[in-house]
Image 1 (cartoon, rainbow, N blue to C red):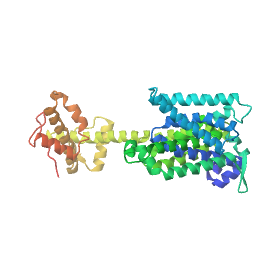
Image 2 (cartoon, one colour):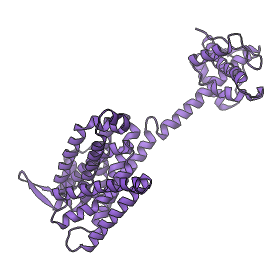
Image 3 (cartoon, rainbow, N blue to C red):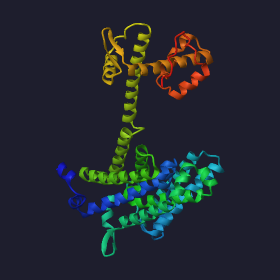
Image 4 (tube, rainbow, N blue to C red):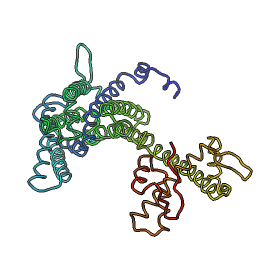
Length: 432
Protein backbone atom coordinates (compact mmCIF):
# COMPACT_ATOMS: atom_id res chain seq x y z
CA UNK A 1 0.00 0.00 0.00
CA UNK A 2 2.78 2.45 0.95
CA UNK A 3 4.75 1.66 -2.22
CA UNK A 4 1.65 2.41 -4.29
CA UNK A 5 1.21 5.79 -2.58
CA UNK A 6 4.86 6.72 -3.08
CA UNK A 7 4.85 5.86 -6.81
CA UNK A 8 1.49 7.48 -7.54
CA UNK A 9 1.22 10.69 -9.59
CA UNK A 10 -0.48 13.77 -8.07
CA UNK A 11 -3.60 13.10 -10.14
CA UNK A 12 -3.71 9.50 -8.89
CA UNK A 13 -3.37 10.82 -5.33
CA UNK A 14 -6.33 13.14 -5.82
CA UNK A 15 -8.38 10.33 -7.35
CA UNK A 16 -7.50 8.06 -4.42
CA UNK A 17 -8.40 10.52 -1.66
CA UNK A 18 -11.54 11.79 -3.37
CA UNK A 19 -12.66 15.29 -4.42
CA UNK A 20 -13.71 16.35 -0.90
CA UNK A 21 -10.34 15.58 0.63
CA UNK A 22 -8.65 16.95 -2.48
CA UNK A 23 -10.31 20.35 -2.00
CA UNK A 24 -9.34 20.33 1.67
CA UNK A 25 -5.71 19.58 0.79
CA UNK A 26 -5.72 22.27 -1.89
CA UNK A 27 -7.16 24.82 0.53
CA UNK A 28 -4.63 23.94 3.21
CA UNK A 29 -1.78 24.16 0.68
CA UNK A 30 -2.78 27.61 -0.57
CA UNK A 31 -3.32 28.92 2.97
CA UNK A 32 0.05 27.57 4.09
CA UNK A 33 1.83 29.05 1.06
CA UNK A 34 0.25 32.44 1.71
CA UNK A 35 1.29 32.39 5.37
CA UNK A 36 4.80 31.24 4.48
CA UNK A 37 5.30 34.16 2.07
CA UNK A 38 4.62 36.88 4.63
CA UNK A 39 6.09 34.76 7.41
CA UNK A 40 9.48 34.71 5.67
CA UNK A 41 9.75 38.50 5.87
CA UNK A 42 8.46 38.47 9.46
CA UNK A 43 11.11 35.94 10.53
CA UNK A 44 13.92 37.82 8.78
CA UNK A 45 12.83 41.09 10.43
CA UNK A 46 12.56 39.31 13.80
CA UNK A 47 8.84 40.19 14.01
CA UNK A 48 7.54 36.67 14.58
CA UNK A 49 5.94 37.65 17.89
CA UNK A 50 4.03 40.41 16.12
CA UNK A 51 2.77 37.85 13.61
CA UNK A 52 1.61 35.72 16.54
CA UNK A 53 -0.15 38.75 17.98
CA UNK A 54 -1.90 39.60 14.72
CA UNK A 55 -3.08 36.02 14.20
CA UNK A 56 -4.91 36.24 17.54
CA UNK A 57 -5.91 39.90 17.55
CA UNK A 58 -7.84 39.73 14.25
CA UNK A 59 -10.59 37.77 16.01
CA UNK A 60 -12.67 40.77 17.22
CA UNK A 61 -12.48 42.30 13.73
CA UNK A 62 -13.75 39.06 12.22
CA UNK A 63 -16.57 38.73 14.74
CA UNK A 64 -17.73 42.33 14.29
CA UNK A 65 -17.68 41.90 10.50
CA UNK A 66 -19.72 38.68 10.78
CA UNK A 67 -22.19 40.38 13.11
CA UNK A 68 -22.63 43.07 10.45
CA UNK A 69 -23.58 40.41 7.90
CA UNK A 70 -20.27 39.22 6.50
CA UNK A 71 -19.10 35.66 6.07
CA UNK A 72 -15.63 34.22 6.71
CA UNK A 73 -13.61 34.90 3.58
CA UNK A 74 -15.74 37.81 2.36
CA UNK A 75 -14.29 41.25 1.69
CA UNK A 76 -15.96 42.75 4.75
CA UNK A 77 -14.34 40.15 7.03
CA UNK A 78 -10.94 40.81 5.43
CA UNK A 79 -11.36 44.54 6.06
CA UNK A 80 -12.42 43.97 9.66
CA UNK A 81 -9.50 41.63 10.32
CA UNK A 82 -7.03 44.06 8.77
CA UNK A 83 -8.40 46.89 10.89
CA UNK A 84 -7.99 44.77 14.03
CA UNK A 85 -4.43 43.90 13.02
CA UNK A 86 -3.49 47.55 12.53
CA UNK A 87 -5.15 48.36 15.86
CA UNK A 88 -2.87 45.77 17.46
CA UNK A 89 0.19 47.50 16.03
CA UNK A 90 -1.10 50.93 17.13
CA UNK A 91 -1.79 49.70 20.67
CA UNK A 92 1.65 48.10 20.84
CA UNK A 93 3.31 51.37 19.83
CA UNK A 94 1.14 53.29 22.31
CA UNK A 95 2.03 50.99 25.21
CA UNK A 96 5.71 51.13 24.24
CA UNK A 97 6.06 54.90 23.74
CA UNK A 98 3.45 56.32 26.13
CA UNK A 99 3.35 53.77 28.94
CA UNK A 100 7.04 52.82 28.78
CA UNK A 101 6.36 49.09 28.35
CA UNK A 102 9.03 47.01 26.59
CA UNK A 103 7.92 46.29 23.04
CA UNK A 104 7.48 42.54 23.58
CA UNK A 105 5.38 43.19 26.70
CA UNK A 106 3.28 45.70 24.75
CA UNK A 107 2.65 43.09 22.06
CA UNK A 108 1.58 40.60 24.74
CA UNK A 109 -0.85 43.04 26.37
CA UNK A 110 -2.36 44.15 23.06
CA UNK A 111 -2.96 40.77 21.44
CA UNK A 112 -4.17 38.96 24.58
CA UNK A 113 -6.65 41.76 25.29
CA UNK A 114 -8.01 41.82 21.74
CA UNK A 115 -8.12 38.03 21.49
CA UNK A 116 -9.99 37.81 24.78
CA UNK A 117 -12.38 40.49 23.55
CA UNK A 118 -13.00 38.42 20.43
CA UNK A 119 -13.70 35.28 22.48
CA UNK A 120 -16.17 37.23 24.62
CA UNK A 121 -17.93 38.54 21.51
CA UNK A 122 -18.19 34.99 20.15
CA UNK A 123 -19.57 33.73 23.46
CA UNK A 124 -22.10 36.53 23.88
CA UNK A 125 -23.34 36.48 20.29
CA UNK A 126 -22.92 32.76 19.64
CA UNK A 127 -26.52 32.31 18.52
CA UNK A 128 -26.24 35.09 15.92
CA UNK A 129 -23.01 34.10 14.16
CA UNK A 130 -21.61 30.93 12.65
CA UNK A 131 -18.51 30.82 14.85
CA UNK A 132 -17.62 28.83 17.93
CA UNK A 133 -14.53 28.55 20.17
CA UNK A 134 -13.49 25.25 18.59
CA UNK A 135 -13.54 26.81 15.13
CA UNK A 136 -11.51 29.75 16.45
CA UNK A 137 -8.83 27.54 17.97
CA UNK A 138 -8.54 24.65 15.50
CA UNK A 139 -10.41 25.63 12.33
CA UNK A 140 -12.81 23.41 10.37
CA UNK A 141 -10.66 22.29 7.46
CA UNK A 142 -12.52 19.00 7.17
CA UNK A 143 -15.81 20.87 6.50
CA UNK A 144 -14.40 23.42 4.06
CA UNK A 145 -15.45 21.45 0.91
CA UNK A 146 -19.13 21.64 1.90
CA UNK A 147 -19.38 25.46 1.76
CA UNK A 148 -19.07 26.15 -1.97
CA UNK A 149 -19.52 28.99 -4.43
CA UNK A 150 -19.82 28.84 -8.21
CA UNK A 151 -16.81 30.15 -10.12
CA UNK A 152 -16.93 30.03 -13.93
CA UNK A 153 -19.42 27.19 -13.75
CA UNK A 154 -17.39 25.20 -11.21
CA UNK A 155 -18.43 24.55 -7.63
CA UNK A 156 -15.45 25.43 -5.44
CA UNK A 157 -15.08 25.74 -1.67
CA UNK A 158 -15.52 29.33 -0.54
CA UNK A 159 -12.40 29.08 1.67
CA UNK A 160 -10.31 27.90 -1.28
CA UNK A 161 -11.45 30.77 -3.48
CA UNK A 162 -10.76 33.29 -0.71
CA UNK A 163 -7.34 31.76 -0.05
CA UNK A 164 -6.41 31.95 -3.75
CA UNK A 165 -7.48 35.61 -3.95
CA UNK A 166 -5.49 36.47 -0.82
CA UNK A 167 -2.50 34.52 -2.15
CA UNK A 168 -2.55 36.51 -5.39
CA UNK A 169 -2.98 39.83 -3.57
CA UNK A 170 -0.23 39.14 -1.03
CA UNK A 171 2.10 37.68 -3.65
CA UNK A 172 1.58 40.68 -5.93
CA UNK A 173 2.19 43.08 -3.05
CA UNK A 174 5.44 41.35 -2.12
CA UNK A 175 6.58 41.27 -5.75
CA UNK A 176 5.90 44.98 -6.25
CA UNK A 177 7.61 46.03 -3.01
CA UNK A 178 10.30 43.34 -2.86
CA UNK A 179 13.31 45.65 -3.08
CA UNK A 180 11.86 47.86 -0.35
CA UNK A 181 11.03 44.84 1.78
CA UNK A 182 14.58 43.48 1.50
CA UNK A 183 16.18 46.88 2.19
CA UNK A 184 13.94 47.50 5.20
CA UNK A 185 14.44 43.98 6.55
CA UNK A 186 18.23 44.15 6.63
CA UNK A 187 18.89 47.84 7.40
CA UNK A 188 15.85 49.88 8.36
CA UNK A 189 17.80 53.03 9.22
CA UNK A 190 19.68 53.01 5.92
CA UNK A 191 16.44 52.36 4.03
CA UNK A 192 14.80 55.33 5.77
CA UNK A 193 17.79 57.52 4.97
CA UNK A 194 17.62 56.42 1.33
CA UNK A 195 14.01 57.59 1.09
CA UNK A 196 12.27 54.22 1.38
CA UNK A 197 8.86 54.64 3.06
CA UNK A 198 9.69 52.13 5.79
CA UNK A 199 6.51 52.82 7.76
CA UNK A 200 4.33 52.14 4.73
CA UNK A 201 6.39 49.02 3.94
CA UNK A 202 5.87 47.71 7.48
CA UNK A 203 2.17 48.54 7.48
CA UNK A 204 1.78 46.81 4.13
CA UNK A 205 3.57 43.74 5.47
CA UNK A 206 1.34 43.62 8.53
CA UNK A 207 -1.73 44.07 6.34
CA UNK A 208 -0.53 41.07 4.31
CA UNK A 209 -0.09 39.11 7.54
CA UNK A 210 -3.65 39.92 8.57
CA UNK A 211 -4.99 38.84 5.17
CA UNK A 212 -3.04 35.58 5.33
CA UNK A 213 -4.28 35.02 8.87
CA UNK A 214 -7.91 35.49 7.86
CA UNK A 215 -7.40 33.19 4.88
CA UNK A 216 -6.16 30.52 7.28
CA UNK A 217 -8.65 31.28 10.03
CA UNK A 218 -11.38 28.98 8.76
CA UNK A 219 -8.92 26.25 7.82
CA UNK A 220 -6.59 25.97 10.83
CA UNK A 221 -7.84 28.44 13.42
CA UNK A 222 -6.22 31.44 15.08
CA UNK A 223 -3.68 29.49 17.13
CA UNK A 224 -2.29 26.99 14.65
CA UNK A 225 -1.95 29.62 11.91
CA UNK A 226 1.08 30.82 13.90
CA UNK A 227 2.84 27.60 12.88
CA UNK A 228 2.11 28.40 9.24
CA UNK A 229 3.57 31.89 9.63
CA UNK A 230 6.75 31.02 11.49
CA UNK A 231 7.85 27.39 11.17
CA UNK A 232 8.38 27.02 7.37
CA UNK A 233 10.23 30.35 7.23
CA UNK A 234 12.40 29.45 10.23
CA UNK A 235 13.28 26.10 8.65
CA UNK A 236 14.07 27.69 5.28
CA UNK A 237 16.29 30.30 6.96
CA UNK A 238 18.49 27.49 8.24
CA UNK A 239 18.82 25.86 4.83
CA UNK A 240 19.45 28.80 2.46
CA UNK A 241 20.85 32.32 2.80
CA UNK A 242 19.34 34.38 -0.04
CA UNK A 243 16.00 35.91 0.96
CA UNK A 244 14.15 35.07 -2.26
CA UNK A 245 15.47 31.49 -2.05
CA UNK A 246 14.29 31.41 1.56
CA UNK A 247 10.80 32.55 0.54
CA UNK A 248 10.49 29.95 -2.22
CA UNK A 249 11.75 27.15 0.02
CA UNK A 250 9.43 28.24 2.85
CA UNK A 251 6.45 28.07 0.49
CA UNK A 252 7.52 24.60 -0.65
CA UNK A 253 7.93 23.36 2.92
CA UNK A 254 4.57 24.85 3.89
CA UNK A 255 2.73 23.18 1.02
CA UNK A 256 4.37 19.80 1.70
CA UNK A 257 3.64 20.09 5.42
CA UNK A 258 0.01 20.98 4.80
CA UNK A 259 -0.60 18.13 2.37
CA UNK A 260 1.27 15.52 4.42
CA UNK A 261 -0.35 16.70 7.65
CA UNK A 262 -3.86 16.48 6.26
CA UNK A 263 -3.30 13.03 4.76
CA UNK A 264 -1.81 11.74 8.02
CA UNK A 265 -4.71 13.20 9.98
CA UNK A 266 -7.14 11.51 7.61
CA UNK A 267 -5.42 8.14 8.00
CA UNK A 268 -5.12 8.48 11.80
CA UNK A 269 -8.56 10.06 12.27
CA UNK A 270 -7.29 13.09 14.20
CA UNK A 271 -7.22 16.89 13.94
CA UNK A 272 -6.06 18.02 10.49
CA UNK A 273 -4.80 21.42 11.65
CA UNK A 274 -2.96 19.90 14.61
CA UNK A 275 -1.29 17.25 12.45
CA UNK A 276 -0.26 19.87 9.89
CA UNK A 277 1.46 21.89 12.62
CA UNK A 278 3.17 18.73 13.91
CA UNK A 279 4.47 17.90 10.43
CA UNK A 280 5.79 21.45 10.04
CA UNK A 281 7.54 21.06 13.39
CA UNK A 282 9.08 17.83 12.11
CA UNK A 283 10.32 19.67 9.02
CA UNK A 284 11.97 22.25 11.23
CA UNK A 285 13.67 19.57 13.33
CA UNK A 286 14.93 17.94 10.14
CA UNK A 287 16.28 21.32 8.99
CA UNK A 288 18.05 21.73 12.34
CA UNK A 289 19.76 18.39 11.73
CA UNK A 290 20.75 18.78 8.06
CA UNK A 291 21.30 22.54 7.65
CA UNK A 292 24.55 22.93 5.67
CA UNK A 293 26.21 25.42 8.04
CA UNK A 294 24.24 25.63 11.29
CA UNK A 295 22.84 22.11 11.39
CA UNK A 296 23.67 19.60 14.08
CA UNK A 297 25.21 17.16 11.61
CA UNK A 298 27.25 19.86 9.87
CA UNK A 299 28.56 21.27 13.14
CA UNK A 300 29.31 17.79 14.43
CA UNK A 301 31.12 16.87 11.24
CA UNK A 302 33.04 20.14 11.37
CA UNK A 303 34.12 19.41 14.93
CA UNK A 304 35.22 15.88 14.00
CA UNK A 305 37.19 17.11 10.97
CA UNK A 306 38.81 19.85 13.04
CA UNK A 307 39.81 17.38 15.76
CA UNK A 308 41.22 15.05 13.09
CA UNK A 309 43.20 17.87 11.47
CA UNK A 310 44.62 18.86 14.86
CA UNK A 311 45.58 15.25 15.57
CA UNK A 312 47.42 14.91 12.25
CA UNK A 313 49.17 18.27 12.63
CA UNK A 314 50.22 17.38 16.18
CA UNK A 315 51.79 14.18 14.87
CA UNK A 316 53.68 16.15 12.21
CA UNK A 317 54.91 18.70 14.74
CA UNK A 318 56.00 15.96 17.16
CA UNK A 319 57.94 14.21 14.39
CA UNK A 320 59.64 17.50 13.39
CA UNK A 321 60.67 18.24 16.99
CA UNK A 322 62.00 14.67 17.32
CA UNK A 323 64.11 15.10 14.18
CA UNK A 324 65.32 18.48 15.48
CA UNK A 325 66.52 16.73 18.63
CA UNK A 326 68.14 13.94 16.63
CA UNK A 327 65.66 11.34 17.81
CA UNK A 328 63.23 9.04 16.07
CA UNK A 329 59.60 9.97 15.64
CA UNK A 330 57.50 9.06 18.70
CA UNK A 331 55.43 5.92 18.42
CA UNK A 332 51.62 6.30 18.46
CA UNK A 333 50.35 6.40 22.02
CA UNK A 334 46.70 5.71 21.19
CA UNK A 335 44.47 4.25 18.52
CA UNK A 336 43.60 7.75 17.25
CA UNK A 337 47.30 8.66 17.00
CA UNK A 338 47.99 5.41 15.13
CA UNK A 339 45.15 6.21 12.72
CA UNK A 340 46.63 9.69 12.21
CA UNK A 341 50.04 8.17 11.41
CA UNK A 342 48.42 5.81 8.93
CA UNK A 343 46.56 8.70 7.23
CA UNK A 344 49.74 10.76 7.03
CA UNK A 345 51.45 7.79 5.31
CA UNK A 346 48.57 7.55 2.84
CA UNK A 347 48.98 11.26 2.07
CA UNK A 348 52.72 10.85 1.58
CA UNK A 349 53.68 13.15 4.45
CA UNK A 350 55.50 10.45 6.46
CA UNK A 351 57.23 7.26 5.37
CA UNK A 352 58.52 4.12 7.09
CA UNK A 353 62.06 4.16 8.42
CA UNK A 354 64.29 1.77 10.40
CA UNK A 355 63.44 3.63 13.59
CA UNK A 356 59.73 3.71 12.86
CA UNK A 357 58.73 6.66 10.65
CA UNK A 358 60.17 9.86 9.28
CA UNK A 359 58.88 12.96 7.55
CA UNK A 360 58.90 13.22 3.78
CA UNK A 361 59.88 16.51 2.15
CA UNK A 362 56.20 17.53 1.93
CA UNK A 363 55.55 16.46 5.52
CA UNK A 364 58.60 18.39 6.71
CA UNK A 365 57.39 21.59 5.04
CA UNK A 366 53.93 21.19 6.62
CA UNK A 367 55.43 20.41 10.01
CA UNK A 368 57.71 23.45 9.85
CA UNK A 369 54.72 25.74 9.35
CA UNK A 370 53.01 24.28 12.42
CA UNK A 371 56.13 24.59 14.60
CA UNK A 372 56.80 28.07 13.20
CA UNK A 373 53.27 29.22 14.12
CA UNK A 374 53.66 27.75 17.61
CA UNK A 375 57.02 29.34 18.37
CA UNK A 376 56.13 32.70 16.81
CA UNK A 377 53.08 32.94 19.05
CA UNK A 378 55.07 31.94 22.12
CA UNK A 379 57.67 34.60 21.30
CA UNK A 380 54.99 37.24 20.74
CA UNK A 381 53.25 36.39 24.02
CA UNK A 382 56.57 36.34 25.82
CA UNK A 383 57.25 39.88 24.64
CA UNK A 384 53.80 41.47 24.96
CA UNK A 385 51.98 39.48 27.68
CA UNK A 386 53.00 39.26 31.30
CA UNK A 387 52.88 35.49 31.47
CA UNK A 388 55.38 33.03 32.98
CA UNK A 389 57.31 31.01 30.42
CA UNK A 390 55.58 27.78 31.44
CA UNK A 391 52.20 29.42 30.69
CA UNK A 392 53.01 30.20 27.07
CA UNK A 393 52.77 26.69 25.65
CA UNK A 394 48.98 25.98 26.05
CA UNK A 395 47.73 29.02 24.07
CA UNK A 396 50.39 28.42 21.40
CA UNK A 397 49.32 24.76 21.21
CA UNK A 398 45.87 25.95 20.17
CA UNK A 399 46.77 28.91 17.96
CA UNK A 400 49.32 26.97 15.89
CA UNK A 401 46.43 25.37 14.00
CA UNK A 402 44.89 28.72 13.00
CA UNK A 403 47.67 31.15 12.05
CA UNK A 404 47.86 31.92 8.34
CA UNK A 405 50.80 33.13 6.28
CA UNK A 406 49.92 36.83 6.51
CA UNK A 407 49.52 36.79 10.27
CA UNK A 408 52.77 34.86 10.74
CA UNK A 409 54.56 37.47 8.65
CA UNK A 410 53.07 40.30 10.70
CA UNK A 411 54.17 38.65 13.95
CA UNK A 412 57.66 38.10 12.55
CA UNK A 413 57.87 41.73 11.43
CA UNK A 414 56.94 42.81 14.97
CA UNK A 415 59.46 40.48 16.62
CA UNK A 416 62.36 40.64 14.18
CA UNK A 417 63.77 37.84 12.05
CA UNK A 418 66.51 36.58 14.38
CA UNK A 419 64.33 36.12 17.44
CA UNK A 420 64.01 32.76 19.21
CA UNK A 421 61.08 31.47 21.19
CA UNK A 422 61.08 31.95 25.01
CA UNK A 423 62.59 28.47 25.43
CA UNK A 424 65.58 29.37 23.24
CA UNK A 425 64.51 27.22 20.29
CA UNK A 426 65.01 28.40 16.70
CA UNK A 427 61.90 29.50 14.84
CA UNK A 428 61.76 27.77 11.42
CA UNK A 429 61.77 30.16 8.43
CA UNK A 430 58.81 30.69 6.11
CA UNK A 431 59.47 28.66 2.97
CA UNK A 432 58.32 29.88 -0.49
